[in-house]
Image (tube, rainbow, N blue to C red; front, side, top):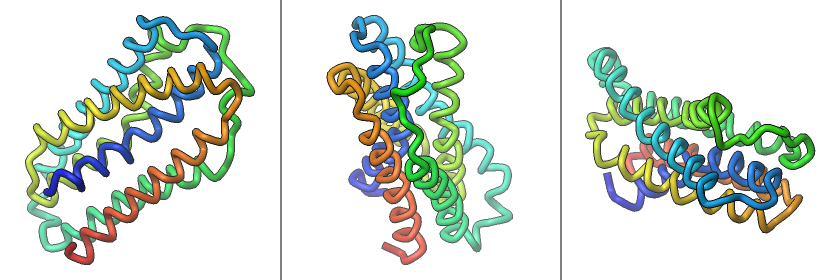
Length: 188
């Protein structure tokens, strides 16, 4: 897989994390370095681990779907992308209902990290179905998510109440995943 495609997938997957980290920054108003690193670290770790889990899962079903691998990848990426587009277009305002607890700690952080990385599980499954390796892509996906999450927290702190940014980021991420799925089906 070309690095540019892998990078586009990584950025698209990180849009959920960006939306959550942006909302977190908006709620915190001033994030300490430890808060930013905790959130970015947790999100990056789970974003890297989920494709590996999906890839391993895909190894068990790969023989059943190799004839339809391109369509399966398109379907999975379109499903995830469509969900992101739907959630972004729905327009929940990120800064309206700030949780008084610190979302960069404990169980809340883990739940956010898992929730924002579920779509990466489907991408890992797609990689497996297509016969792609996973270790380098998982590393790239995790690092990109780490950077985008850290940037999201910082931008959120600076932006105040610009919740529309997170909505557009999620829609753009969803459109990117659907576009990548189309590219796979069309043989690009």
